[in-house]
Amino acid sequence: MSAESASQIPKGQVDLLDFIDWSGVECLNQSSSHSLPNALKQGYREDEGLNLESDADEQLLIYIPFNQVIKLHSFAIKGPEEEGPKTVKFFSNKEHMCFSNVNDFPPSDTAELTEENLKGKPVVLKYVKFQNVRSLTIFIEDNQSGAEVTKVQKIALYGSTVETTDMKGLKKIEDH
Image 1 (tube, helix red, strand yellow):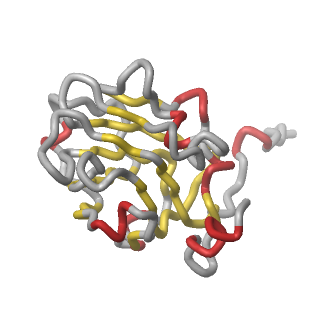
Image 2 (cartoon, one colour):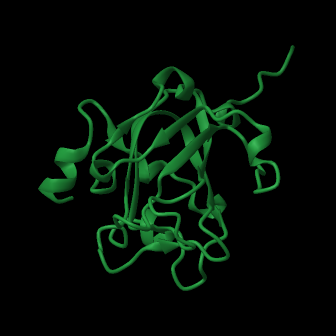
């Protein structure tokens, strides 16, 4: 981890990258040649030449499940000044969302990204709304300039894990 990225992580929080369940990650309306791993995976997201791009229009719908329960504190989304995301909505524990029903649910939080945010400045979320997160849906509604294509260079999620009991690991006690 570079010193620059370490300094961006809010105090007391960790980069939640290691807790993402990659087998369930999805992104709707992504360009096939500029897909989600470019912005989300370690190594790829640090490469300024790689990015996630929308395909048919400016909207992106990203589903990120976690391999354990997390508390989400803040996020950072980097992108270019013109095509970078503007309105970003977060939904906690909402599965199977699509463009046709995303507006049917109230978001857990909404952020309007500024030029500072697009350079990597973290945005603090309504922490109380993200205490027991098993999955996160991120809806990028539009971009800074109203362009047809939205570009995302990096998505980083910051928070902590929740200590939980692994119910699958418990053995049933037989009655005698």
